[in-house]
Image 1 (cartoon, protein in one colour):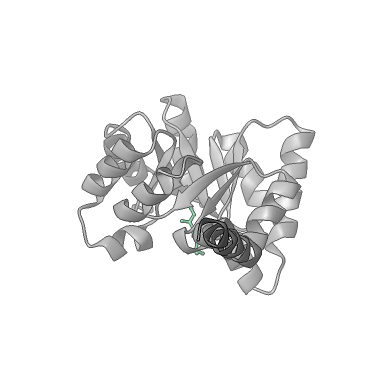
Image 2 (cartoon, helix red, strand yellow):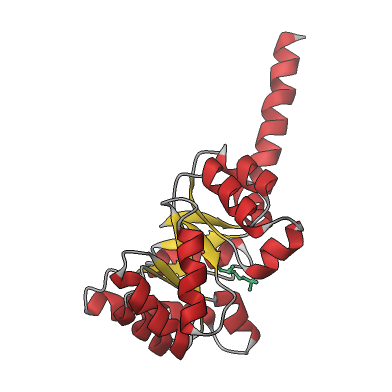
Amino acid sequence: MRIFIDSANVEEIKEINDMGFLAGVTTNPTLVAREGKDFKTVVKEICGIVDGPISAEVISMDTAGMIAEAQELAAIHPNVVIKIPMSESGLRAIRLLADKGIRTNATLVFSPAQALLAARAGASFVSPFIGRIDDTGNNGLTVLDDIVSIFNQYLIDTEIIAASIRHPVHVVEAAKIGAHIATVPYNVIKQMVRHPMTDLGIARFLEDWKKVRA
Ligand code: E4P
């Protein structure tokens, strides 16, 4: 499973990218709004940092508006993937964009049925929102598992991005289930790096080293 960062913060993205494991980035309107910067400028900056798919989301709710926005965003860089919200208009846009060779990421996916339709419409990626499914009292990982089984059963090549990740266990479980990608917030990536026993081990090694050197 590949690791993307779910962030529009250029400093965070740079810091994580330097660690060597990052394969892509997802943004959304909330994350971009938080930065208080021009959307296209942020997308361009991110494309200059990470060499992998960079998801940028459209705001229009009608197919024609989605297509127009998608074409502008796709022109920024070949790595830009257009995030399209799951809806009837969204499915139409996914199909038209796929026919034009523009990659899409179907976002706000909450059920296997939605994931199947988006994949069949030609989405390159689907993003089930694990944490937000959990928030509804359902099990996000069960939904992810169903999507993985269906795609495997029919050899569907749309990649599954486990999104709305809240903690490292979500990431590990998504990997065990067979998601292709997890898009992980900055703070959760930091939690994944560290372990109290690693910190303790480093402190002990340094202490012991000092004794020998003293
Ligand atoms: C995915 O692409 C979304 O940007 C994201 O994972 C949403 O997560 P949230 O539920 O933490 O807002």
